[in-house]
Image (cartoon, rainbow, N blue to C red; front, side, top):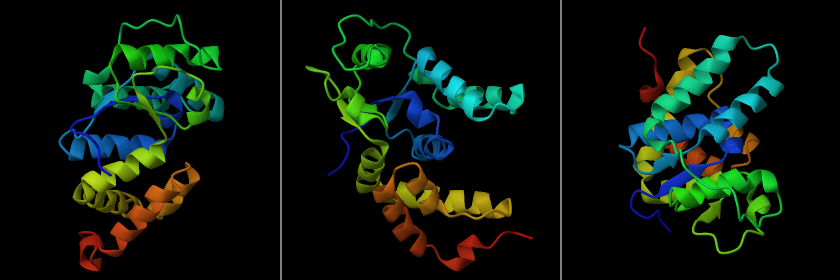
Length: 198
């Protein structure tokens, strides 16, 4: 199975909250010549920053600002400004703004780790999708792009003297199927491509 041409993907805060998923979405988006559209709202961004602050109470303001600025810079064309929250029939009323924005921007997919939270929403115009499933579809559609991003990520971590265990990072953020795809891509990378310039 493959993605439709340039699908519109509305991203829930729980996905942007994960550095691993932020990195993968951002790099696939920019390195691949925008193979999908990433859509978001200021409500989503506020949730991301609130969650990061709760997890990292000792981060300085610059670090929080950098997350916000990087996301809004990379996905600058995807901000959704006008949407309604009335009429949402899902189980959690706090998800009304997510649903409303996904409908308003005519998203093909709502990307969320909390798929069950949207299971009760009827007559939705989008498909609720877990990032693991979405990233596998990206690999089905443009495997060369996933390979190129995996190589770039490995080199990034090696240059910083850290373990580039991409599959482990993906499993930790609930993406085991995509982790296996990435593991296979990594096995195809020639060792000479991983040597860092002196």
